[in-house]
Length: 214
Length: 84
Image (tube, rainbow over all chains, first blue to last red; front, side, top):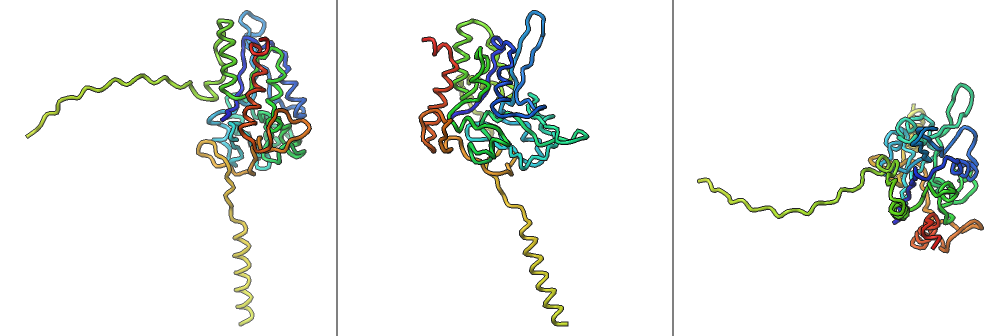
């Protein structure tokens, strides 16, 4: 079963913002809302690294844990989505998210927040697939069209990988072995938990002679 | 007095029915952790009708075909595969 994940290779990201542009264009995201953005650390100094950040569709999504109206759900392929008809725009999910993924369009004067908007892994939302209503509320449903997220497919250097976790992990492993460095997978520990520990073979327990008490 | 009593009973029955309509119905379709999703149900991507924009070779409802199409599509991100 597919388990959709994003993986950003900090060794390859050149901060071109192509992923951001692809996302905004594909889903016609309004001004002030960035479902994806590029974060650069050590900007302008040796060791500069850039990472493309969006919703990582966490295994145990903290946004869902704090949502007071329970509008989050997870699809069978591991994508965390939400129902905008239920969202009240409280902003709790924004404070809970370790990646700053939830976005809130300004819905009026005095800083009034609209309903939360975030990366959908190009999987739409709880409306009829590939319908106009789904597109208006959540953006294009590329997964239903047999495609992967636009940001990952558009990435020129293939720094951003998207798709089944096992497949993209294999791609990344091949890449790391080829170049011999840069094995760090940014954000995966936070989003999907620590890697599973290898089980040590259990040593047979020696039977202790039992003492009888009279 | 009797018409008033009948009217009161009828009003009570109508009120009870009206309040029953306000009760919350469980709509859970998927959960994350201990939370119960209360929104609208969603359909799976492999169940969608094909459109002119559809890629891959899978019929609506063919989950295995959809997953295979996704795997093939993901390999397009693997330049080690593409340059061979």
